[in-house]
Length: 396
Image (tube, rainbow, N blue to C red):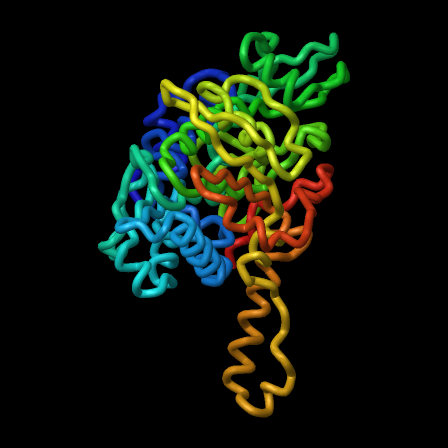
C-alpha cells in the first residue's frame, strides 16, 4: 500500500483543510487522491454488498437484462452498465450468467473512479464516467449512497443549519440552509423546529440519478440502495462510516467509507424534471407517471418509475430462498446440498431486516416495466426508519 492510500497519506495529500460541509469533505475523503474508493483493496476489503454475498445476485441481474433484451426486440448490441462497479464483480458475474446468444450481443461497461483491476474479463470496458448513450440496462447497486451529500441540523432557535466537519470528524454548525437545498429540504425532508434533528440533503443524488437516466436511450435504469421515503424519514439522519467490516463513526480522513441512506422517492421524481431540480408528487404510491428532461434540451415521455424492496424484486426474478424438497436428499444427495446452499444464499439476499429491505428504483425508458407482471408483494420500503439497518453484510 502506498502512502497516498493510507489515512495519514490522505491527510498529507489533502492539506488537512478546516471545517467544511459534509458533501465537500466526503467527496475528498472518498474520491480524492488517496481516497477510500481509490485504495487497492477495494470496497470488498471493508464490506460486502449483495454482489459479494452470493453469485445469485448477478444471476438475477442477468435475468433482468434478458427481460430488457426481449422488451427491446433483441437488438444487435445490448448494453449493460454497472455504476459504482467496485472491482467489476457484478459486470463479470452478469456476463458469466448470460445465455450464449445474449452474451454474444452484450456490451458491458464498469463505471468506477479506481483503476481497472488486473485480470478483469476483457469484454468489460472500464470507464470513469457513464457512457453517453445506453440501450439496455443501467444498474446502480449501492452507488447513490456514496454520492456525497450535505448534512443539516436544527439549532436551538429551530433553524436548520449546515453541519461543518473537520478532517478528524469534529463538527460545528455553519450558516442556515438557503436556496435550492432549502427548497429540497422543505419538499422532501421537512424538519420540525426541534433542536438536534438532522437530515441529509439529497439534491446531488437526485441530479446524479437524473443524469444517469438521461443516458438511457431505451431500456431500464435501476438504482439499488438502502432507502427511506418522505413519510418515514429518520429523525437524526443516517450518516455513518464503515471500515474493515464494522460500522464506525463517519470521519472524512479517507480511512473509511462514508455513506447515508438514499431518499429514493426524491430521486425517482427528479428524473422527471429539468436537471433534477424541481419537485414532483410523493413516491408513496408504487408508480409515478411523468415527463423526463434530465440533461436533454427537449423533454421525452417516460413510463412511470417504481419503488419496491429487493425482496420483492428478487422474488420476481425467481430468487426466493425456498428450501429444496427433502426427497432430493435421498435421490441425489450432492444436488440437494447444492440446492440447500443456494437457498441459504437466496434467503440472505431477501431477508427482512437485512439485504431484502434494500430499495429498488426502476425507471423504464421506452419499454414496459420488466418486473410489472411478476410483482406480488406491495411492500414498498417497509423497514422501520428508526433502525439504521446494515450498510451491507459484514465482510467475513
